[in-house]
Length: 285
Image 1: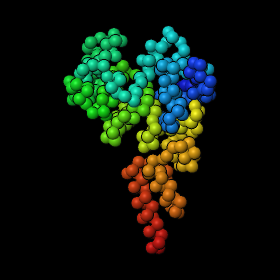
Image 2: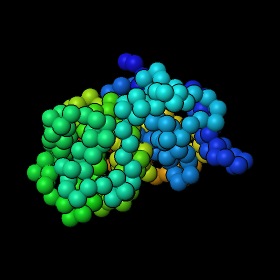
Image 3: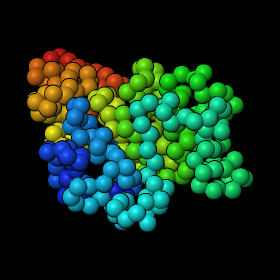
Image 4: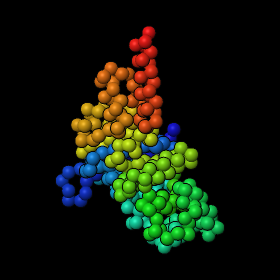
């Protein structure tokens, strides 16, 4: 499948800084995929995100979006139509006093015809499960609902890729669950490419691919099951693993043979139950 974003030997450092924040990044992201980028504070993951729609430009190397280099100023508007960004604090992205007006804000600024804006706003709000709140005041919504409105505002621009930079960092567990469920559905059901920047281990288990960043470089790149199975390497990076992985690891240490692909709670429970029944059958035979 074709790549929608490509990093080609990208380095980045801020003006007057002596050290690079990104160090020789070579990555590509396929259209329609769901990638999680994990790393401790200062690892470079948010800096990576801001390179994907030209908020930041490489000091060395090239970032291409649908084949367009982000350094080409004439193509920057096209790039930002392709890549939508959602940040940590939804209050910083909400600009209107009514939900549907906020979602309409970006298409209006792009000169989209009124009839099409109406359709885009309704479609976007339905996609994130917020249509019934379209006439509500955003400041009266919960944190998770606000973040879903922010996502709807990006969807109304009809991007091919949404980059979410720690969108659940300020949310409670219920709000986090709402947002992760929403973005997973957008990828699986709508085919929108999703790149999720996070420091929550359990948010990564839904992804097709997991990239671990450390000190501005790529420490690991693979499926969540592959990456989380290397618990010692994760701990050396100062990162934990989901509770399901920890449980599977501990049971395997005690002689079980459980698959690390059972990352979600229900799958993990089923995997353990099957293993217990299998062991019991051996004992009884």
